[in-house]
Length: 257
Image 1 (cartoon, rainbow, N blue to C red):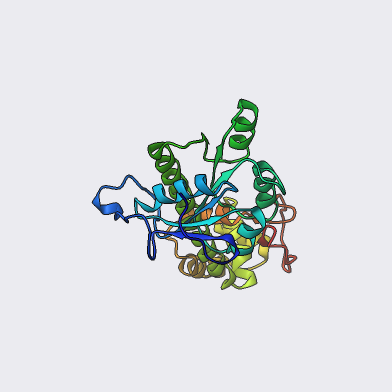
Image 2 (cartoon, rainbow, N blue to C red):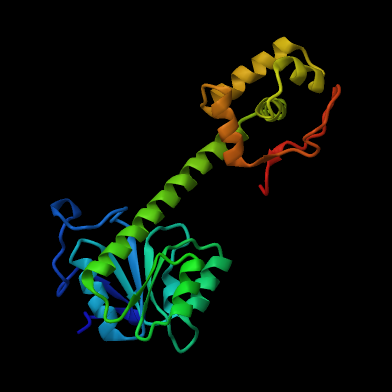
């Protein structure tokens, strides 16, 4: 039986009266990833939704339940993390259609599909499109917890990488136009002498700019700078240019920024 619902047909497990007992992950609950992030459960079947919610709340997870895609989309915070346990069928759209909708909107939330009548074709399509797992109803507690744990680990890794990239972009934005030019040419493998010739400046000036670039970007070596440039996907029009360029065009920028 499902737990009491609040307004708009949503439910919260693991909090308040009637909630399933919470078990802290440190006490042996087999849950990985960031357990502070919510697990969204989207299923029209109230009983199935309640069972999933109780299983996940029993291992200390924050669970939010919804009965239809529109309710879930209204409450979804684009900047937040977490994962989604998603049924394959709804009156308004299929689970696969919602998955495609989320991808099109740039919402990278790991999905675990559940289905009353799973078929290989649907399962393969869901996983190929990025789903973490595809489970049959009624779900087994161990399989569900394992899948959600994997999804939360994946979500945590994604958010860490996004945070790292954001910090790198912010550091890159502190570089002057000339420092960006020097950084790009250095990461292309050009020696100071060639960089100086391309930019029409002295080799000593190039060394000065390189020192400032490494300091501002928080790196210690050219190898680290190359990794940063790859992470930022630095682009430059005419990467193969050569010859003296006293006033090079301002084309050094982060790709698609």
